[in-house]
Image 1: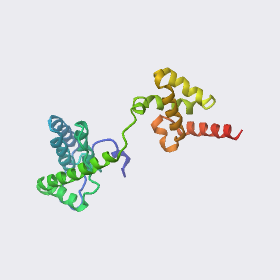
Image 2: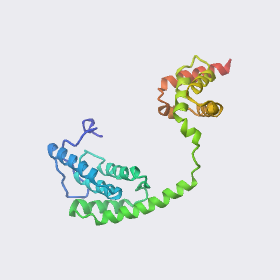
Image 3: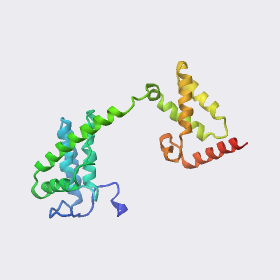
Image 4: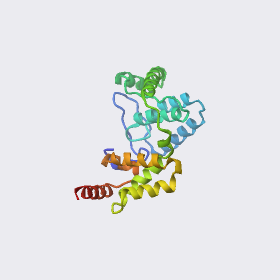
Length: 225
């Protein structure tokens, strides 16, 4: 946000919408009340598509935040779909002009027909693309899924204990948390994933950069001996 005081809270000042004469509410108390009412009404809608479209319409119209209201509405529109295990909605290929005109219909005329038609069109495209991507994806490894937390823990333990033998640390974690029949497979997964750890994946394992750099330096020192 340009103004850091706007971050993480409802809007405290008036805002204008580009290319529109619509002026949203600017009194913070009213915004707070209507935002709560919006969420309460959305929670009462049982149909995921209706709930999704409701958020797409009403969040931008209320403009509860100082910025990113439309982007927030598109994210919020996906929550009911994901909860219902439905295909998510993407607007990546939606023409910007078509979306702007549909939103102007909501702002200027309180009419949702254009946005409704755009929503349906975008969702049909999203469904086809999503199914195509799913067909191309490899099936997940059930063993890796079952022990993903163990793998993360083992890698975190190795990196945060650089003075200890890595294989011994891995063996101890695996012996404690993995069924005996799966020991060798999980051990191999940890070693394989450990080789791919880099600064961009540290958050996955709950690691700090300083911890990773210290471990990396120790590993390189051992190799050079």
